[in-house]
Length: 215
Image (tube, rainbow, N blue to C red):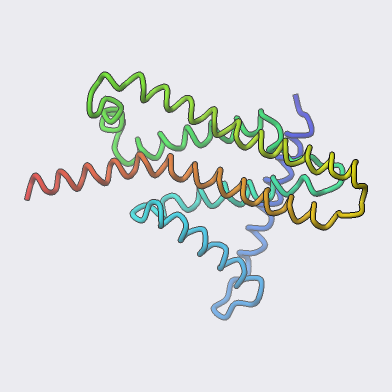
């Protein structure tokens, strides 16, 4: 079923693609104001990723960067009259959480190989396997529900405030919505980064231990 959430998501994906194409068409050595601003955003995202996973910043930049940009636009789309943010729909946040879940394992398997990646689920003891599996499921569910609940409550609170106070104080409500929407996008992206980096960091630590044992 194609509902408003699906349509809005498609439109946002199209807008992100169009902006990326337009902004990358005429890059120059001496950038103007727009290129400088875009480069500043990209550098900020890359630095944030490097603080969590310094060895894999460039590897994770396309996925985490795209996720942050999409979420920021999706969360802010609720400010457009007649448009509801797709992230206030549990089906949309669940889809995003599943993408993060799959990406976490995809990056781990790609770097380590399937066998080596699966071994970490029975470390340090095979008894912990059920707990690792439960943790994978619960954190994915929590990721989806957290974003859905926060965005739903944000839009409902703004609507109720407008119904009570009318349009006497639209600017504070607008600023609150913008700040909270960006914060929620940052939190979701940061949690996704931590989950993905967790598996990659395990590989990095294992390589260090193997290097010490051969030394």
